[in-house]
Length: 355
Image 1 (cartoon, rainbow, N blue to C red):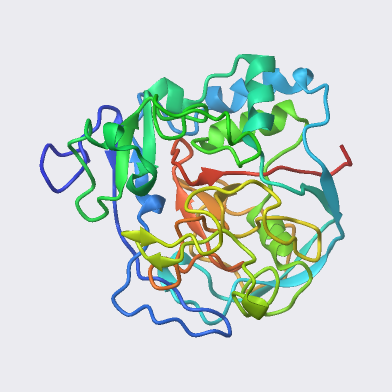
Image 2: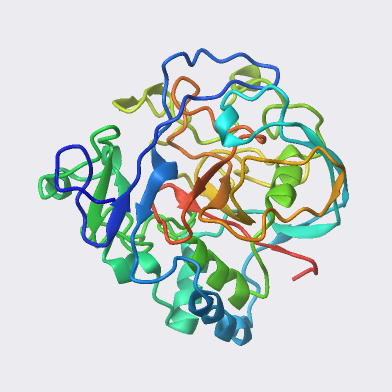
């Protein structure tokens, strides 16, 4: 519901349903999160003229498949196997991190990197595809990375999370609005892509989005009962392994890891599967519909519920901080409607065959 009041953001064609959640603890590392809240990016919703997951949207990506005549990204082989998905020590029960369950996934190939702006630009040039952010005319941007000139033109914000602002002209090509460009970030992950946009790219590249199980299996890199892709310590030997928030969210990011917004892909060490940025940098779409109810039965290649309202996203982003939004763990998860887009939301692709 969009209300013309100070309590909720008023944006044409945008419906913001904000429901902040407490941050979560870890499987083996306690978190001081009492009274803390999430970053709010999981509840930025649009109200479109049609269904957010209409048959037309799904079909729109199919026509681009034939255009994939170049190698888009290096992929790495992920050997199939069984792993423990989720956790029995959830910090946010309503996020559906529990219960821990045995899951087997078949072998697949996964992009080593999050899809970059340059790769997405190649897709746009080859197909003429228009993203949903471009169609809507705006997208959500974290206030802390906006120029003063852009902020001065915005008079509305989400009351409970005023760091999220609707910016006219914000899209993959203009990440912080019309006065920004991608010249110096072609090697950064593309942002402001909706689930439908991601599906369209994957289809063009003869790939697909990973299931949540595939994504989490790849994130864990063969490690059992570990919080992060590399283990349980956030900064082993003082080294940063992911692009996250350091400082006091949302007012000050010290940039101790070298970045205050997205970072170039491969800026941090890969996990044991050779995958970079599986947590931090940008959230990544998966193919699964969102649910918080999971069977404890042993499953083989689970794909989530057959329908729903939101799609699952994994990995956290550069906005995540343990004291506020501790979702940069492999077991952590969040969701958005398929037409959502924001300055910390991207994706990577998988395939059953080597590309």
